Length: 431
Image 1 (cartoon, rainbow, N blue to C red):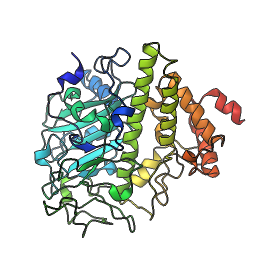
Image 2 (image 1 turned 60 degrees about the horizontal axis):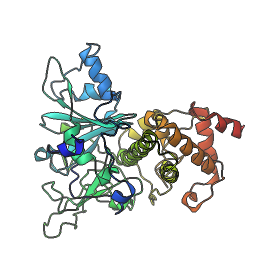
Image 3 (image 1 turned 135 degrees about the vertical axis):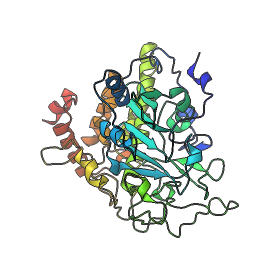
């Protein structure tokens, strides 16, 4: 039975995808449906090595335990085991989870993340929602019962969650998505199509509808922290108390959350990371299928287009401009760059700019990720060659005009110093 034919459950994902508008109108044409049962993919059959499946094996073997906190349940210890900082906390008040009945502007859902792992928590919810990235098998979906148990275990929920997390919005592969919605006072997206996918290309003025946002952004008027009080005018948000908030005390009771913030910089980082993950999954699977079917020659033009698109996103070629400086109010702006790696001058691709753009050195830190390194050799080699052409200044096409000579030089130096598995010819060519 095909996986798609079994999608009959309510989604257990981070956002409900029904009536979500993807970026662009050609998602089906550019990213046609991929058969998850294809032998080159075998999404539901291959062994997993994502962070949660690793924890699951340790729990079963008795090599670790999850400590239960009387106030917060398993959440703090789960975040600790997954190496997720609480300062990554973001609060979303739109009813975009299968626990929607418990979510409202007064009781938002908390989301925590790092590279490749995401945890959602709802006040008085029955479960924690978890997304965990496997380097070859894409995102995996789990829940953890919040009630104390002698043997807590993660439950895989792919069949339910893919109903939302596999769509044009995720490039028609199991993926991630962040939305901005016009939300009513009850937390319900105001109308069909009220949710729009966001990533680092989205103008900041169109982001964060349905989310709380703490931090300052100058004159920027975004959609965060605001609801539409009049159902007859659902796109008219009440923004009278929504911009440059450094505290949410007038919106919620922060005592119910691990942190009192929903950090603007964490939100921007999450938005970049979601599409980057989806692109890596999409293009890796396409390449695996072409190789598996012996159609590499026929795939050559598509391979080149995939690599070009991936490199453009890696280099933030279409990033929305920041007009006024942005500042978060949590420690995320310190702890995120500290993850590194850093070169011998102390530079890192995680270093933040927040004056003109998100990162000081515009190349995605996800180039260090295992899912990047585990791309099929055919695709990864093409990506490296395209990336080198840009950074070496050989590619001066309009797509990369915003990447200055200084940017290219700095990025090249950082990579040569911090990424040990660069192709050998990179080092020979630059010596």
